Length: 354
Ligand SMILES: Nc1ncnc2c1ncn2[C@@H]1O[C@H](COP(=O)(O)O)[C@@H](OP(=O)(O)O)[C@H]1O
Ligand SMILES: [Mg+2]
Ligand SMILES: [Mg+2]
Ligand SMILES: [Mg+2]
Image (tube, rainbow, N blue to C red; front, side, top):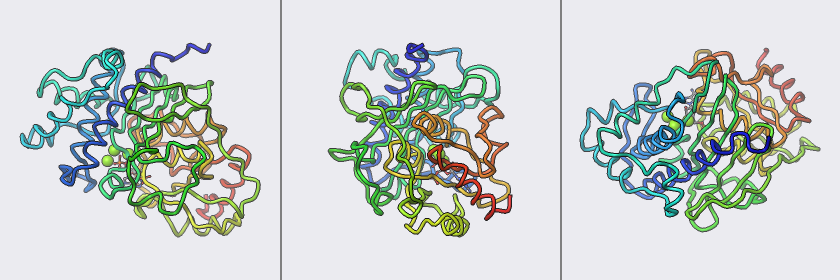
């Protein structure tokens, strides 16, 4: 029982660790090679490079598995200078531990193979079989702003998340470090920063330092019990366009939450509440049409549930990862310690009139 998904977990952790080494290099560059996508959201050389390295590792180890990843190589095919900058990063990012690098299959052969591997993330997903969900940089806006971001990898089997790994280079290593108001801004990945959250279904959730050395055993993490709403706070997106802030203020009032929300980018929110540094993750729809993406939630969903939390949409339904690249059956996200999740959902439904 304990060996279930052990190999998937090890490869996922190393793949995320290696990809985060690449994103950290880009984080420290002023010119991040930002391109604007069709939906006007940004993508950087870090996103493309990290996606290439992760898919290469998965293809080496699990060639039959499908991959749903956020980015595609089209902008690089149209811009050779951008493509070459990314290739330089991909070519030169390796794990220090030679054995670990070997487990990942040692990177990408050449520039054409890099484009090809980036485009291997185009699976439609769905309810059947093994599907990896990749967000090479979640929180790209935070990454550009100097805030939080996460490298995210989840394994779905028949639509259920079985393995989840989140690399958060700018979060404190210390699980007990309180979430200060400035956690979303002016972050670094200096000494004492960089954490890797992991979970395997039925086996709990862990955290460990992200690198750069070989990965050590993780420590079990658990959510913090909310015994008094007056001392709790919401963890929410920095982006007002990603989560409705006026609805959240009304929900807070209903629940008796008086502390301001902790705002941070990316799935670092899931990791933060899973280890008890934060309390409740709220993501309230800002439009009737937006569909959440599976790569924005797969790893975090499992990590929080394995740490003693419940993760649902705003109606209280579990997130359904089996309907394609988006969470088409769900609206918004509410993640909270199991004991108070029902109470939070009740307030959410009243305010959103669901
Ligand atoms: N209108 C919208 N509502 C909710 N989420 C949105 C959104 N537009 C974009 N996003 C998603 O929000 C993610 C960031 O999450 P957060 O707001 O919690 O930091 C983005 O991931 P990327 O940064 O990987 O593109 C993007 O997929
Ligand atoms: Mg994006
Ligand atoms: Mg994302
Ligand atoms: Mg992304």
